[in-house]
Length: 310
Image (cartoon, rainbow, N blue to C red; front, side, top):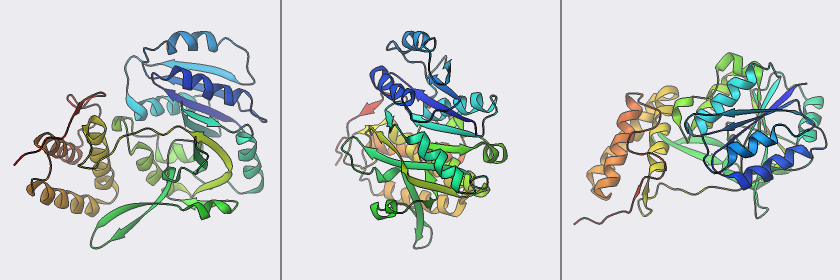
């Protein structure tokens, strides 16, 4: 079985070094490691130029991007590069995720004892650096009321069994079946960040089930951000809102309609700052006309504190 690893990195050189070291000491190795450098400017390019010439149990590949295309663009590039190498499975993880030494071994053991050809993906258990399960990486959904969509995380008790099936996975410690990718396609590169792996999960589930195997473990440093009106308005929130609405429009359109009408009502209540209301309107409008990619205004680093209006 040929497994190729894809890691996407952007301006986190010290964390990348730590992450790469975890793959070099696996109890069972894999075939290729592909590192996608998302136009970093912190010395990552120079480091990877040296790193790729150091012997390892696997072949090394470095893809240097000419622009920062976000997580979705980086993972699309990595998936496309790996597909050209004709693997059986493509493994995905962030540059701040640190694999347990037997992570690959546990994956092979699961594949040896189960009919995985019909599965679209296999993912592991993600832990925070405090040793607690990071439940947000594996989820399902429920619909309440008329068309209210809510994402639901699996509880810790689910991880006490040898494996269980999930609806959504994140791109942290996830193995994608190449057979499924050939049927449903790669990640949507134009999402930039957020919901790219969720939307991809919906398509993957059309091919086969997604199994979460708790014995496959990785530790992950979580990022920040949020969508509460009490938090600062940030560029990340635009992509969260836009991409979720676009995902629902594509796969469950009545949920997108309901969400849009609800937010339209909320905007009329004037509980948002002028700048935040503008961001929300832009996100929903762009979702409905499928204007994706990196926004001309809401680029990484954009931020404005919430203002109070009478």
